[in-house]
Amino acid sequence: MTIHQRTITLPPHPRGFHLITRIIQNQMPELSTIQAGLAHIHILHTSASLTLNENADPDVRQDMETIFNHLVPENSRDYIHTMEGSDDMPAHAKASILGSSVTLPITQGRFALGTWQGIYLCEHRNRGGSRSLVITLFGN
Amino acid sequence: MTIHQRTITLPPHPRGFHLITRIIQNQMPELSTIQAGLAHIHILHTSASLTLNENADPDVRQDMETIFNHLVPENSRDYIHTMEGSDDMPAHAKASILGSSVTLPITQGRFALGTWQGIYLCEHRNRGGSRSLVITLFGN
Amino acid sequence: MTIHQRTITLPPHPRGFHLITRIIQNQMPELSTIQAGLAHIHILHTSASLTLNENADPDVRQDMETIFNHLVPENSRDYIHTMEGSDDMPAHAKASILGSSVTLPITQGRFALGTWQGIYLCEHRNRGGSRSLVITLFGN
Image (cartoon, rainbow over all chains, first blue to last red):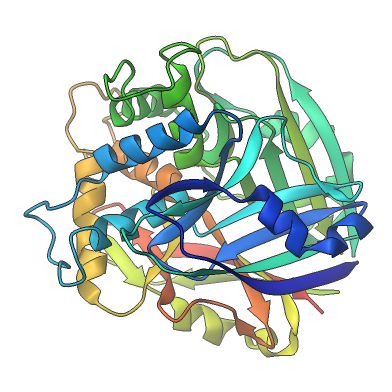
């Protein structure tokens, strides 16, 4: 079994949910050499996250932002970690709800995703800046 | 290290949380050959999800449905992705909150789950239809 | 590719979010032998969970507890699984929202975590008792 690991950096994205499947694929040419395996994509931050969701209608990505803002509202009087801005503590909570990594099957040299599945970068800060990912592919 | 990968299809399940541990085990006879490894189970859809939770009292699975319906209510006026039915956008959000895959340890030919842990199929649509899973086992 | 797997037991922690990165590292001396790989850390319980989040300001961990208690309130009249105490059903839901495992990259003998990322034990019961984890490291 072989393993390929690389760190990539994404340019700043606005707060919200963004489709990054193609960026990941293009950065990992070794993907085509794996017949059966797994891909692990990990974000090195605690106020942004990764998930899989619908890759077609951009309205889904906008509603995801709406729903997560309802789930974890800003400016609660109960928060004590407020020094880094009103968007910071909700960003940490959203990051743990969604998760810091996704693991995908690899089949015949490609990500084995469903027809409608894409990889999302979830940027929870108003100005999150660049985000780094560690991508690990392994298999036969 | 060896790797075994297979796609299986689950028949339609009603909206809610369903225990599928035995179905997965029965579809993967190679499990018994792995002394130490991992199993990755991935759902190829964006309105259903997988998680681990209590395998005994069915009331837990019913309360999970109640809790997730409270977390992401239907018919919010804030949603713009409404064409596919009132259960669709909440289903996408629930799928990302719970996740598209679970990864479990394999020890001495079995899933190394806790006494009370089982694998749940979480069907978030009213009529989700068949659901396909890619199961990947690897280890020594 | 080599694989190392071990079960460890954490002593009882109070309800809340606790940083356990060093405990995990200290229990897995084989980590230093892996140049590129992954670590999978799995909790064998359904009312506690694991996540990655901020490792510096303890206020973040306190606010996480506040936020998750808002997300899944206790004592809802809608719950039917109530026999094991008012904290039990919310604990199951929080465990599935956060997840039973985390997977991290390993690079040059260390967990490849971001500067601010740490591993959290999320104890959702008032008196959860000891918690067991299965840790699996693999790579070259």
